[in-house]
Length: 409
Image 1 (spheres, rainbow, N blue to C red):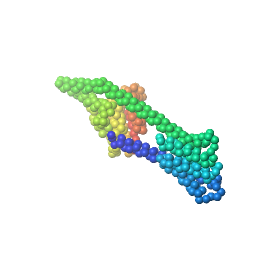
Image 2: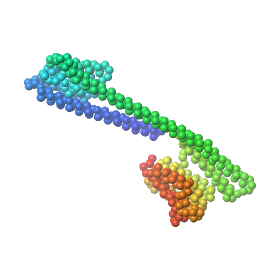
Image 3: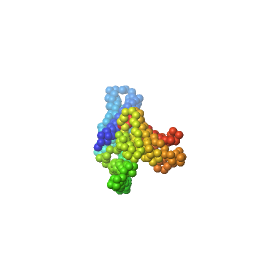
Image 4: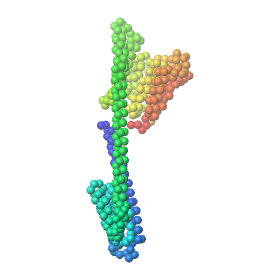
């Protein structure tokens, strides 16, 4: 695993843990708020509806009610104990407040918490305890009709407990649906990645079986022709041209192998060419008879590898256009390091035949148009721009690419 992957994993873990801590803090704040509202409501109800002669026992009962409501802000793992405290308070409140309803706000919330947070035996025991507390308070106040007692037990203990169970079950169902969706998305991404990898393998195979064969054949035949010329005393421009063809075919094979390694996604793939190899590129162009002048402005600065390779490919296309559509004599290339950007410019004289055919002939040419479009797209990928066209009254063709490098790493 690379250091970048490690940093990404750590960042993701920190974000996940941060979200979990944020959820816990939010639940704690909400629990405190619920406890405070229940405490205020029950205390106010006790004071306004309580006995006229407020004695020590009444104060003790009120203190117990306040403490039981305050316990609603405690951890969910104490839900059973909190429910037990509220159930025990119900018959006592009935003694202190004759004719009072058998529930309190805190008791209803504690029943909900017990249903929501407890599982198995503790959950069933808490329901039984709360139902017993309601029945005992009914017995203290005077036993009502069985049906009425049943409805009061259900309304004040079973119903909030069941609502808590439903809420938890619904959350678990939603979480399960979310997990299934995430699994489906992960499987879909894996399938797409697999399809892309298979397509890359197929492209790499085709490149190797077809293009590399022909490029290798070009180099072999050029070398053979050059050797035959040497055996027959041949020399001059033909020999130089054959040497250029042989050299270019070898360079093409090196680039092709790099692309094959990249398509195969091999970690050990050869380093992609960049601006540091421009001199080698221009040496190959010079071997074909085109004088290439290379000028660098300002000191070289660090350039992201992807931008570095893209600019090298742009320079390759510039040289191809100069050989195809220029006068075949000279080309001037300028590389300007501008601090937060880098600019690559190539200028060559237009061939007289092309100029006579029309100043827009270069753009109209299918191969050139495709190459220029590729140059623009390479620049736009990195937020840059590309310009190309005839300059100096149509005597020269200039292509310029500017790519920002500020903030890249």
